[in-house]
Image (cartoon, rainbow, N blue to C red; front, side):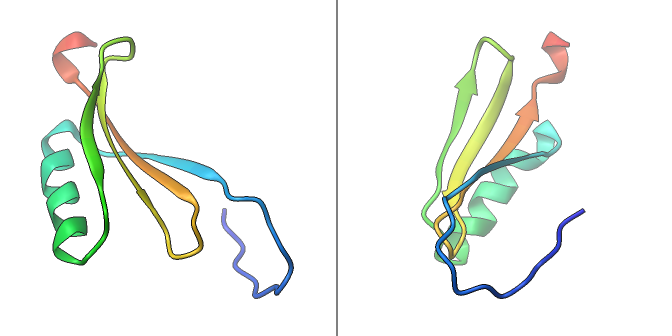
Length: 73
């Protein structure tokens, strides 16, 4: 659950990760880029194994889309 409230206070930036399907990660990264978002990745994480893309929301929070590689599950 997310509660959205306007508060002019200072809050620390957060890192939020969202799972996406492995077949969707490239399309998601391209859609973000097409909308002017600076995207890093997809980056392969051998230790999970998964691929992730990283970007920031307008408030500077670090967002991640993470796709587990199904062959390795």
